[in-house]
Image (tube, rainbow, N blue to C red; front, top):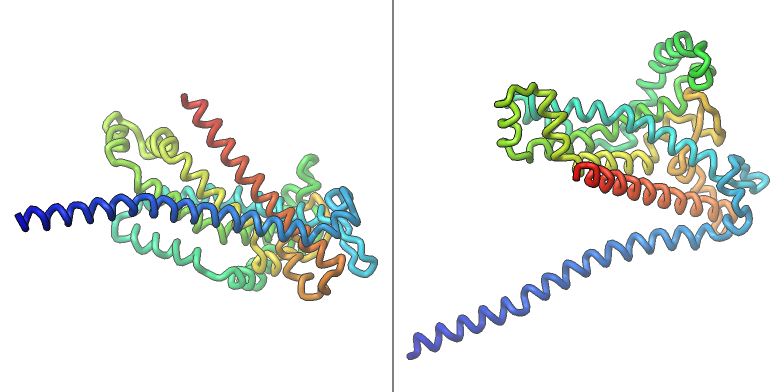
Amino acid sequence: MSTHASGGAASAAAGARAGWGDPAFAGLARLCGLLVLLLMGGIIAVMLYGGRLAFSTFGIGFLTRSVWNPVLEHYAALAPVYGTLVTSAIGVVIAVPLAFGVAFFLTEMAPGWLSGPLGTAVELLAAVPSIIFGMWGFFVIVPIMARDVQPALIHSLGHVPLLHPFFSGAPFGTGLLTGGLILAVMITPFIAAVMRDVFNAMPPVFKESAYGLGSTRWDVMRKVVLPWSRTAVIGGIMLGLGRALGETMAITFVIGNSNRISPSLFSPGNTIASLIALEFPESAAGSLKLSSLLALGFILMVISLITLACSRLLLRTGQTVRR
């Protein structure tokens, strides 16, 4: 009798724990998700509230003009927005094929004794501080660009009618193209690491079936692996693009730090993050300059949200087409 009683009591206690454990865990998970949304909303609200003076003073001209004159207190966002978008686009265009090649080599071609150490090296490269990339870019890449790359591009493409505006100007080494190259080096490890993990996570039976039908490695990657891992691959690319949009110190070393808009990829420019980093220490509390910098931070958040929305739309469109 006592045994049955103790067993029943233990079962009742276990049932009680199970009864409140699941709701408690679900509530904690919902709280974590809500905190993320509140944090994101709080950041956006602080930036918008801090930039209200700039928006009210300059109106729509803050978005459509490129002037940035602290002496006359005339500020506008178009030049740093242009530099942010151009350098990020250059970085992604260069980094995505490079990251795909690294991931493809590590998962399909590299022997086991090389795949592990090389994959670890790629992950360690992602942990290098951005200021190190900036110093490396300034002392190594900028001289190479000024001495070899930019003169060669000017000589070969500077006289082509449609390409002339993009490859003209003096070869100083700094500029939008150099900034894009540094961003490409920085974001490649992030994208490559995500691609490698996703490619390895694919069930082997899918690839083995394709190989059994006579497919080549490239056929398997293009027709089997990439469609299966489409969502995660785009997520990895968006992760790299997010870092490129918000990168500060590395881009500050090599972009030239000039608030101007030029079609030439060799011309100096600025990004939102680099401009904020350079001008923020000299901005007095409550000043129009500080409000303009906070307004730039809000615009950067909006650009990031638009980028994320576009990636979601691409994923949804791809899923619809496959159906």
